[in-house]
Length: 585
Image 1 (cartoon, helix red, strand yellow):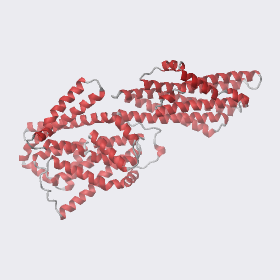
Image 2 (cartoon, rainbow, N blue to C red):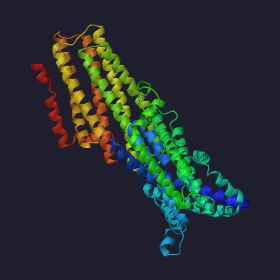
Image 3 (cartoon, helix red, strand yellow):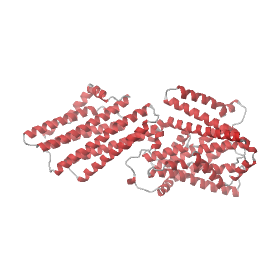
Image 4 (spheres, rainbow, N blue to C red):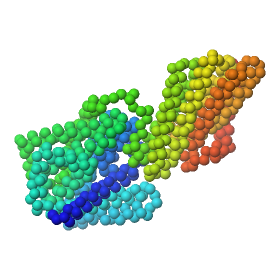
């Protein structure tokens, strides 16, 4: 093989790796919206997790990418550790699909059907279709499909180029002798692991081995250990991605490592024993691309069949390796690995935003209870919850801004904008909860209290605030626009309540029942309650406008106030939270 042959081989390798990367990333983006749905259907059953891992890897053509996503899911709380274990096993089987596709390049025969299946026949067509879709379509999903087709065509062209370039090596004795060294199982495993660790893709390293098999120098005896080692080498990607992640994400990466190491150890020992006592009759036969695909599939299927029942034990082993407690973890983890799959990153952000909303509501509910029954411990709890909402806003805001820079579908982009709008409202609700706890502490420290009548009126206002916040959060959590439309009329009732409370206080002040100091405190209380209701209105309006594909909140408010449903709901809530009943008690 001369220098030009080496350059051709390296060029084919470069095209092969680039094509695999382009195809994998394009398929991952294409599957992103579906991944969100799949995640929601996850169950604790190992078989379901196994199928999820298998299908996902078969779709995106990379077990490394699937495992890195799993680490990200666990790190962000979208997936439990015990679910990750079976998904990782499924990913190992799913990656064998690539080797079967690549084995098509070794098909031989003159029939039309065989010629049609050869990559040299259909790859140019796929490349042409892919270029047309990518260059001339304006729709994101069509462009991504074009990129995936183009990536596949480049991959297969690179595979053919590599195979053609290395064929002359069959006449080089040194090359043939080198492969006889890999018949040593331990050396073969180490070589496969090192090659895969360097290129960080077991699919790519298997493809390279399939290309080298075109020389006729690769036997089953040398290929089997190398394939085993490739399963260990692919763990490097997940281990690197887990650096800096939380303890469960690191455990998921170690589950991947232990699964492959134990599987290789068991079957390598079994293989060596068989070779000693009952040598395999085909061990010294030359292997082709199809044979490598068969070996790769059989090994992963057998390893999974043996270890899947022991997924809980693998989980315990990973927990023993990575120790730690939940108190050491941050309030929220938004994994940047998932930014490459925007649909999943949006879902991760939405769930974190829901948690933020509940933290803000818990803080407000606790602070309203402090008004009538002050307790220093609960006061401290409100401050801690308000601090959590601040952390949520900082982390979510930064994450959503990064997410906005990625290419997304129109729906994902709209939801990202919606979340950016809403987290500010949730954070401000937390601030108002803190302000209300300050009001409660002032009452306690100054040994002041509302009159009995004022307490009943404040309780009615508190009930109205609790309902409007519950409605807003439930509408956000479920995406229910009909529920969101109930917020605005109740917000108007809260505004009316605060005005009426102030008017009634002036009457009591004139009759000598209340004092000016209590008036200032009541004004602080009602102003904060009114602001909370305003933020609830913002949340509901943003949700409705997002569903309609526009963000014109003032426009929605004007439309709502003119509707018959708004007037009906306003009267319903006005009757429900009437202060007349409180005055009569």
